[in-house]
Image (cartoon, rainbow, N blue to C red):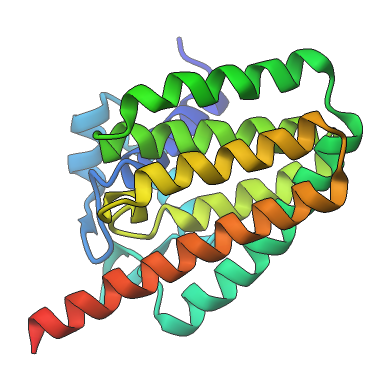
Length: 217
């Protein structure tokens, strides 16, 4: 018999991954019975996972239904401000504390990701792995926890900014600058490189949102 705690964890992780991969997008309704059937999990852990996601503001109520939450302009701005500061701090600490092997992993990721430049979805997944590796290389568990929360909220963005024309190549150049600073042990440069990277991503996000508004008019 499956441990209920494991079932709850699995259901939560499965739903979160479905939101993160845009299987469920902002505004989509999540139905307990449909989720249980899709993931092959009983309804009790699904219900508990939905409650947990609601308390984390990843789901919101629409009448009696739970839907995937969305971020308005103010929330998006606030999220990117916090993300920029925390990511920058992670890069600064990684420059101080990363083991040579951790730096090598980042360098290998840079090389591998060049093959994904024309696949925004795959590059988006690789981008998350890259950032997670920097978080871990900071060797600060409390910072990693806070960044996990921030990246959980990033799952509420319906599209990836890496889909914008030219953004993939630009992102890889920015990643290279971040890794070079970390490898050199230059915390200030690593902080600035990652802050600039998040700022560029935010600019791209705002342009994409503006284009959607213009197309709707």
